[in-house]
Length: 248
Length: 282
Image 1: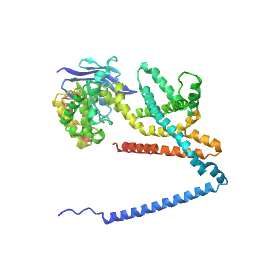
Image 2: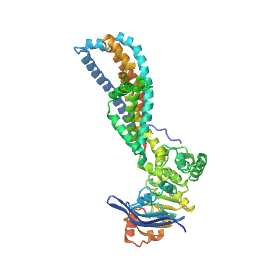
Image 3: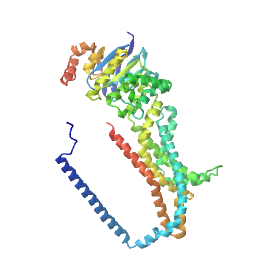
């Protein structure tokens, strides 16, 4: 399995707060890695660092072997190969669903408008949102908005898709439709790193679960092992709290 | 058996009746209090010792009728100057605001110039700018110097452009950073993110304050009379000099208000709609 992403000794601080403290992580092609851990453990920061939205303080991040954290690297070109989906969807409110999706294909990848639209419609059809193509995001439910946001990231055929707690902002009854979509993507072989609080979902969809604690990957392995029989006491503690809250 | 059509319960009918009585009472109270205040104000003015003289000097019906035609002719100039100035100032403001968002060391002078411009022209009184433009520029005796009307208009454009640029800029800054993050994550460059994601939202959000500044501009267009062209205010002044009566100014003032009403109405409508949209968001 070729390696898509390699994070080596990644460090990031905000002021005096050390968010990533020498983090190592590797992701293979077609692999789905779930990042779990308490709020503030660095999950979201790591995803933003991989997408070069946040600059790391030390270490290296490689995409297909290329060091993307060198200052002379063209960040726009790197981001074209990495999709990022946000917790709060971040659709462009002044554009229709269709225009949200075709913006990057047309402006960045210079694809003909008709072709981009056709592809977008195909995607929307697949996720059951074809009738929403002409709607503005504020007319959509949270679950629908998030599915559009995922499609918007996918039409650029990224090497790697990053999902940052994509169901955290959703009403409970809307979580299912987004998770189903992610499961379908896994079956198609999309390489994904997802930060999540949905332990049940991590268990179902992830090939590997990585537990982040104090800016490092403290423990990682198959979901059954990490979630069912963790080695580290801190992982046990974290999972005990999750079970207590009724989320597992 | 079909369901009974809904009828308010007895309790609800009581509530409805009570609210209706309350509403009638409110209307009556409002009418009474308005009448009392209006009468009091009326007496205050008309009982003033100098009222008769003021009435002659400011509210002479015959003079008002005579001055109406030249003032209306002058007002037509104000309308034309306003339309051209408003469009030019909006364009200039957007240009300057955009210039201030440019990144990179190459654009340092552009950013610096734009900043100096918005700082200085927001501080400079419009009257002085008009004098400088309308009397200073012709003084250079350059070939092809435009008319004082154009120069006065340019002074208004340059002054208001600085304000409108700041309105646009605050609109740009009000667009949440997550929008830029989303655009950049899709591979858009900073400039593309500005052009396709930030600016369209910023312009939409800026619409109410921009319109408000445009209302202010509409009346300030009357200041070009200082430069010499015969607009509504200059026409009123010519009348006033002949008769030593201020009624023409009152006529011009009323016309300015009437002229501004549609734009004020539009501004209120747009502001209300924007507020409603903002509150509708989750």
